[in-house]
Amino acid sequence: MCGIVGYIGGKEAFPILINGLKRLEYRGYDSAGVALLNGSLGNFKRKGKVAELEDFVNSENCSGTVGIGHTRWATHGEPSDKNAHPHNSMGDLFSVVHNGIIENYARLKDDLVKHGYSFKSETDTEVLANLIEYFYLQSEEMTSEAAVQLALSKVVGAYGIAVLCSREKEKIVVARKGSPLVVGLGDGEYFIASDASPIAEYTSQVVYLNDEDIAIIQRDGFTLKNVQNNPVSLKISNLDLEIGALDKGEFEYFMLKEIYEQPLTIEETFRGRLREDYSEIVLGGLLNVFPKLEEAERIIIIGCGTSWHAALIAEYLFEEYARVPVEVEYASEFRYRKPIINSRDVVILISQSGETADTMAALHLAKSKGATVLGICNVVGSSLARETDAGVYTHAGVEIGVASTKAFTAQVTVLTMIALKLAKRKGSIDIQEYKKLVNELSEIPEKGRIILESDQKIQKIAEKYHEAVNALYLGRGYLFPVALEGALKLKEISYVHAEGYAAGEMKHGPIALVDDNLPVVVVAPEDAYYEKVVSNIQEVKARKGNVIAIVTEGDSGLKELANDVIEIPKSHPAVAPLLAVIPLQLLAYHIALLKGCNVDQPRNLAKSVTVE
Ligand code: AGP
Image 1: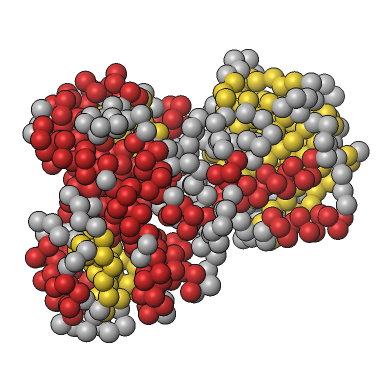
Image 2: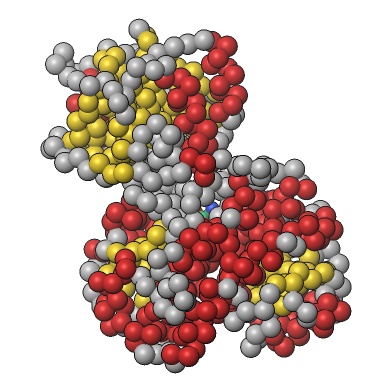
């Protein structure tokens, strides 16, 4: 949700902190701040973007080689200077940056008020800062890390924190539970961040903290313990993150760059998994669990947002080809619904970030019931990747645009490969059909490049409809989830109220919305549902609705009927979602741009939802 950074070493901390916060700004961008230890504890924070903080602090010309920083996605207290992080304790002994939610903060606050503490902000985090100070002042021998451990033992909720103490100037204490935290090991310097992107340009040696880990970081080294004060072994991982991937290049927005990267990222997701001659699929990461998948009485696929849409497409693929019953679940519902799960179940959890709180809770629940838990994830070293039994990485590269695009097509590519491979192993697919589908999959990148060439045409269509305040997206079969995804993209980045619907459902309600102000986007390539979808388009036209149809190239019939068409190359229906979604991503992008929206950092959203 929020992004936190920290630095201790020989260099000036401020530029490193600001650079890191800019890299993490996709995690939250309503306010930002830094605290620097230089004699005293300097705290500089304000509402707005990191760039505004940078100008503000530069004017204050502060220095220090030990510091922490934060970019915020508000949970408690609206975005403002006083609610921005870092939060100092009442006596200015501690400064804290926090990513997560302290659920019992109100009760802790009441107790602290009884001990004479007062508060400047509405945040849960300031309560933690005062709680740490409260314990620190309990005895002369108390160290800052011991005070942090005591405070955290009282906390209910999720946290990723970094803490400075004005009396212990050569130290940063960090801890996590539920929210991600990475420590970068430099040469006589240490970097702290919510994910690896701010660290990659300084070192490739990192330590991913696990839940309840606490690290005491000093210039000459760092110690890893857990909140119960037991030592924890250090596992150093090698970071493989290409810095160039973190820049927009010639693109105005990361989202457009990531849409254009899809042919390449799908090829990357094929790499080492699709034989050169496209005759076979090899999924080494699942080799040991394929028997479980073959025996599974059902497969439960879980995710949130766009990842949930990928799960819906997988349901069609697994049931049609692997002939295994599939249930698709919203993680936020699954975790509290008291679902019936047993050891013969296989649960697949899909997450771009690998840190989404609801998805992680669903993982823990399924695991606690003995199910086999598999992950499909885009971030190496993320919690989901480290806590599942096995899994497959999508090789989409770092996705910075808050609206997920290339991670979605990479997820669907991986799910298609798993479904086909499982079908072949189970013998539930004819070998010719298998080969044909593997070949169809291999043609997607090239066909994707063809679709990107119609970007300008899609921009023209966006110009026609960018003043609409509502929109309806329709699709059938494999393309119903694509309609949902198209609607989500438009909602997320342009704030237009858009609804995705199964086209067959339109007559049961949504058709009431249709009039000449409503753009209706219909995903209608040639497939088994084509005629039915054409009838749905006629029903919309009969009520003066404006139809934008995604059609198979050369479809003159719909060219006549629809107000606007966007053509996509012909493909097998089972892989058509990978093509049909691209025009919907571009349509949303151009409408948002025309409405003057910040496409990469849409209001109220964040890239990785690490709180409930
Ligand atoms: C999609 O564009 C959104 N960013 C959001 O719905 C996202 O898909 C959801 O939060 C799940 O994120 P995850 O894949 O990282 O778990």
